[in-house]
Amino acid sequence: MKRFLFGHLIVLMTLTPMLHAQSDYVSLLISAYGSLPNGDFAKKVGANPILTRRAGFDVGNDVGLAKAGYGGGIELNTPVLVNGLDWVINLRFLANSTDPTTAEAEFEHFMGDSVDLIYETGTWINIPVMTGLRYEYQLLPYLGAAVFLQGGINFSKAASRSGTIGDVKAEQTTFEFARDFGYELGLSLSLFKKWRLGLSYLSLNTPRYEGSRTLSEKVFPEIFSRENKILGEERSVSMYVISLGYHLF
Image (cartoon, rainbow, N blue to C red; front, side, top):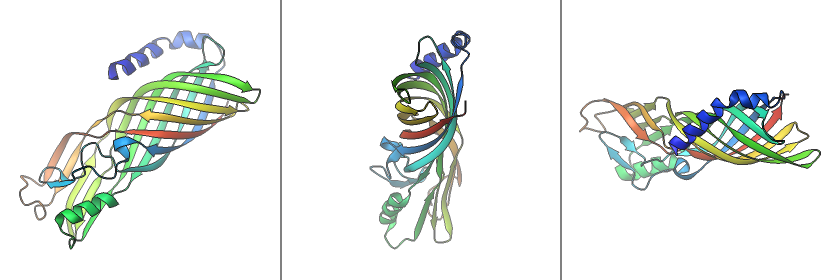
């Protein structure tokens, strides 16, 4: 899949001069986004949450804890080849907060219900840069329906995680930005050639995140060191995206 998307991206970039030659008309769309996490990205805890001397409060493989999110972006549309077909390039910023309550309850039960644990998680950041094709059919003079498919690169930062027991910071985990390939498939409606309402499925693969984790020896007495490097923690990222856009020109 990665090779296919990368090849698709390279071909489109190679054809850019020819595509621009087809028409002088270019439109710029600005959009607001709402996102609904899907699959493992939306799970609130894994099958076997555990405490380990390396992973601290381990919520489970691939689990994202993500909640509904928001974002914004811009998109450049250039007509190509046939009437209704556009070559598109877009840049978006998507943020999804997280819900640690289920994981916190599991860890408290694991440690003993009398333990006063505060488990907190941060916000996911995804910045997909994509290109592809969009075909629109004019249903009425003021209404059009379109399908689109695009692929590209996503710059992603996983949500931070921390656990506090009493006055002891048991864990503090932060991540750096990672990149991976992704794709998007969707439908949209255009009104008066100015407004656009879209619905799509956005798959951003399973990035491998690097970062750092600091653990307390008071909670994890068997640790080798307080600070540990994270060298490739995989988390699956996918979501459904709703967009409302306006053509500036």
